Length: 320
Ligand code: NAD
Ligand code: UDP
Image (spheres, rainbow, N blue to C red):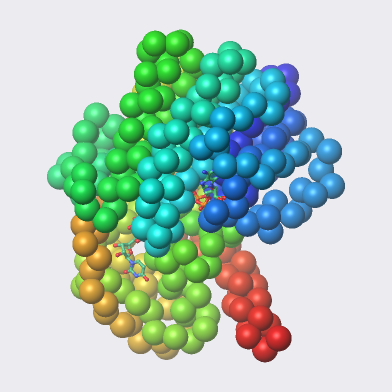
């Protein structure tokens, strides 16, 4: 396919920066937009001399138009519980006004559009594994609601732009993803446990560790998202790794990878923490011929050097 002009919001974040790399590798020209609230220029520093990449520091809650585009990927939003609870109103704002502003860009230029939605739309699910037809179980006023409801509103908005304005929209429901460039201090379980194990600290497991998550390595996720952007499907598609782990098993996997004899420290389970999560990926398999290839042990090993660099950077900052 001919190369395209593509706009990526949230481009300085974990997933956005990996997506930019893939889009450039496919021969496209990419403009990244980010307000750097939770992302970092370090994630796109390697693209400084790339002539097909440009960057605008901008909050997408303010309307924007940086010129003609063929496709918009909307990845801007705080994503980890620590970030979205710290930035509660901003998270609701970017999920509503920010999503609308980015949809307006796609509408203006007749561009395609893909929105990064989330497994959090299913809340604390009563259907397991989660299928796209399940409507979810979300507490609208709980501490996670600023994120969950923002994402559910985004899905309604994206669907309305398809239904009323004919914008060629796509919705991906992303399940827990990890890999290099995951922010080391954003409180997510993989970053917390990897950093703790490498620092020789106790590994914090919330509750009794019996709650489950299904962890997808970043290259698998980006591949699924890229394929979805080329598909004719407008409704939501789960992209994630269907192998389910308890959090305690995940902590033990990290212990054995790093060979640390750190103890496990049990801490209180946060309010409304989903008890189980696993994607049903039948739709992605059938529609995109996609399924993940990287196991948790392989993905953690691939992420090890990155987390070692993060710990080394921390030590340097402390000593300096
Ligand atoms: P991240 O925090 O690393 O990246 C988000 C990026 O969006 C950051 O660079 C941040 O600065 C930027 N941003 C936030 N608000 C903005 C605004 N108003 N204007 C412009 N930029 C703004 O998080 P991530 O893990 O890369 O997540 C990216 C997207 O994927 C998010 O929409 C998130 O909800 C979604 N998602 C991620 C996961 C996951 O496991 N990583 C799971 C489900 C959904
Ligand atoms: N968790 C944990 N220890 C940590 C961080 C998180 O046990 O240091 C748990 C958390 O309570 C949740 C799971 O790990 O049950 C995944 O948490 P994360 O914040 O990564 O993602 P989310 O809850 O949004 O899926």
